[in-house]
Length: 258
Ligand SMILES: C[S@@+](CC[C@H](N)C(=O)[O-])C[C@H]1O[C@@H](n2cnc3c(N)ncnc32)[C@H](O)[C@@H]1O
Image (cartoon, rainbow, N blue to C red; front, side, top):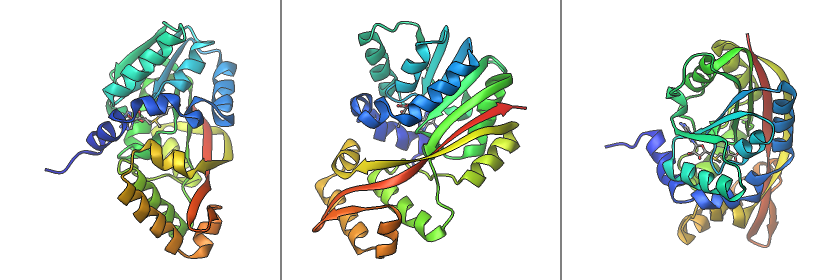
């Protein structure tokens, strides 16, 4: 029997839940600051954080929003996020297990929906953004951050192979044009967009997904034997045959419901 993408996600994230709570790249950064600044400017009363992971975006939102609901398809992730909030004395966030493609909420019941570092796991983007648009109130805002997909097909294939070997639940990253088209098709208009670079420290990045030594060595061989131009495009830093880091791009979008 083949696993659904959601089952893949649950098994990958279920065993690494606490690592996501502790991950510095998830706990903060200029991308989170931007999403929260956009959220704060809306002065929204009801916010939904989709694919909340360790809960860092929901925690930030809870600082200025009366009602925050955090959803995720991975139960152990929700439990870890709930513990994390409790330790910080935050009690107002409600946690609900849900797949982004089947959000268990009425139409138009949130003023803002956020989704950070997660859309590249969704089996398909359009059904996900349609659900998000459905639960947004008229003129509500969707605030999203994800890995930015490359337009160049060879570079896109190279980084996709790396991402999938590291994390089999990675589906793919979408380009800026794809995001704009899917959001438009769902009934959302892009108002702001920001592209940011983000350096990935190799040990930490591969370690968080608990790759076996053999799988990591295989991945390193794949990177080291790729054309130099591919490695240069992602600014791979290499010491001898040791990979130290690489840099990818994040896309941040603010899209308003039409
Ligand atoms: C990297 S974590 C999210 C990080 C978090 N948003 C933050 O700001 O720190 C990715 C999350 O996406 C969730 N996820 C993946 N596919 C999903 C889906 N189809 N529906 C809901 N959640 C999903 C995973 O369970 C995981 O917790």
